[in-house]
Length: 162
Image (tube, rainbow, N blue to C red; front, side, top):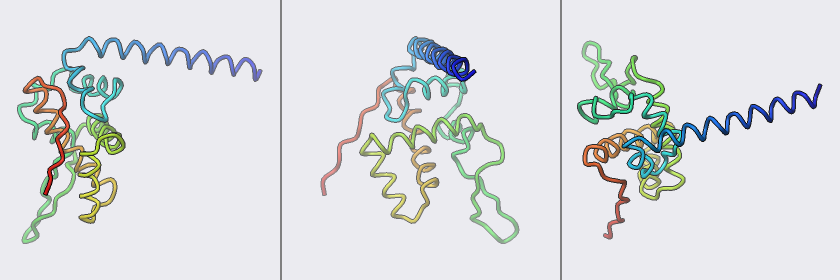
């Protein structure tokens, strides 16, 4: 019985590998694939997920702010009476889109020095890890939007000297 279960697990693992390869080849055929994968943090699977959520067209969102709003990365005011400045995550947003940008931002702090510096700056401002990642994800939405608008690949910024 154990041998049969082990064989089933091996078969499922091989099938998952085939599905991943199929997703990767299909993703590489898309026009935005090179632009998306040039940005640190986005691989083939996260890029394919981003394209699947947006129906393969980032231009259907009129601005980067609209894309960020749909992803739940822009705070909305929840003011009441004389109290103002209550900014919360919107109640309605696409959780799959938020997940894609969150994971890409989380991956980028390990590989991209510019993202790491931005994350460290937000942490030094007193933000928690999840808040700093969300700030980085929002910034990366703007960069990805500009990249697809201009049809350019990611260019890491050079560090400025004092």
